[in-house]
Length: 199
Ligand SMILES: [Zn+2]
Image (cartoon, rainbow, N blue to C red; front, side, top):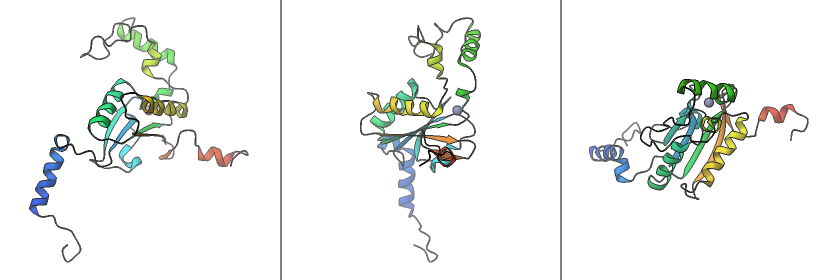
């Protein structure tokens, strides 16, 4: 400590810290919070601010809807099994684009873009075996009617997936774009205080 109470690192400590930062993965050092975050790509979610995390704190995966897709499973499997991640947080949000268009419009739009059918369209250029086949385009796009229900489903997918260890904690929250607050799925404070059955 210096006179004004500030802590100074020695050069030796400084160099060690820089080495740890640069070679974290090779040294087997987890991220600071041992945390992975799955969130919607929506530009209105300040994900670090909402979760009070900083650079170095978490693995962050964002996609359309904050859905547990095959690449979320791939990334979560690697993060939890090899990089010591102990918790996964899923963040969905109000007014999500996944609720804004009817399924049929999205399906038709994509079909048209693909020239009629999505059956043989590559979903992953590196894995030509991976195509939709007979699966429904709606299911692949993950359009959603009820964001709270969708959030619960994403949490359940991760909790029950065989590639995610059982001791990994999975939590999910809804980010309200209108208030800038997080809440648990199904827990609307305004609904509680605005209705007679409120408790
Ligand atoms: Zn969204």
